[in-house]
Image (tube, rainbow, N blue to C red):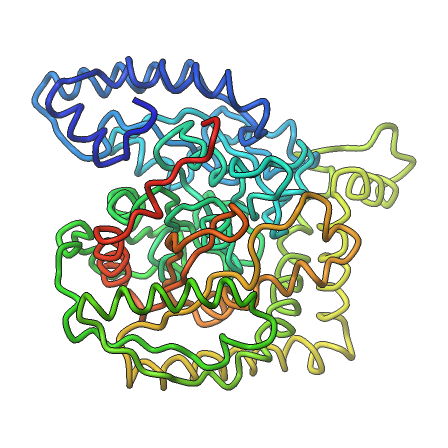
Length: 483
């Protein structure tokens, strides 16, 4: 059962080959047995899962149907879940039980999805390796000595290890796509505003976006269908009709114009990954796609712009965690200032503190214009580059990451080296575009991903291209040894 995709589970449940309760018990037992070596879960919600599974079986018995009805998933531990710990991977929120469900959680529950638990993540989603979590690093199931990527590394490791078929995740600068690449999964960051952020604890509000992580594009289409849609509780949610993402998966790629930016193939890209990307391009050409070289001239400025904007927004968002209303509170504070200082100093980890300091500096009097305002101007230039490119091509293709997954601890002493690993992914967040990573091969036994970017609200096109590619390749079917 654990080898089935979300689509196969939907068909099996519809054909009454097994019940949701049976499947849920199998996966919960598998998580209990195998997750200690991965550390991909922060909380298991066994009682809730069995309750939801029984309810889903009852709904099916009454004639209801649906791709997610009775399907087991997990939520990244920054989606608020009623009465269940929502920690953001931080000591600061270790004792926080959300008083409501995030919109994404509520929508998927209404569709009948079964929540197995909350997955591990970089603290407050800040990181590219899932090593900053207060609950310990997550291990990559393809090689337990390597990182699974971040910040959605828990969701990625759990799905890659076949502990469950799919999971929710979030992407602020590549945190869905990079873990997908590192663990041989398909991961989709939707257009900014396509998926509600209400109840999704914020890192950088203008960049954060929830999305699906699964083994196939078909599964991502199913999960995104349940997540997407307008939400009046979220002022950044966009009232745009949600298409049937599964309906367009079979569309032909004949004549599809694919742009390949020349800036992607610089000295920083591992040549073995470059070769795999070229192989993917050739495969898509066989399916009828037309390849064109394009340019994204301002891509070189994206990383410095991102690492001013994101920490600035983080320093503002995280100011609410002060030890007063909820979250960690220090023992025996001498006064209010001592309460603030010690509660935040004890509650936040090193990476979070680093980004708060950078962000506060960038927003301070005398530096706002020099840093934050300039970064926002660069953001507009990055967006303009994409708009010009999409006048010539339908999608943009390139590597998801410049290197395969690195060893645990390898970049801990050099945070800038880890930041540079986001070079291909952060531009989509700065521009608000949808992006997808899909499996494209292996380097030294570690998975490699190819990234696809599309114009706003063209998630269906990304899923279509990835699905057609996966019909003609088998990278996405590979399973890590021992799982």
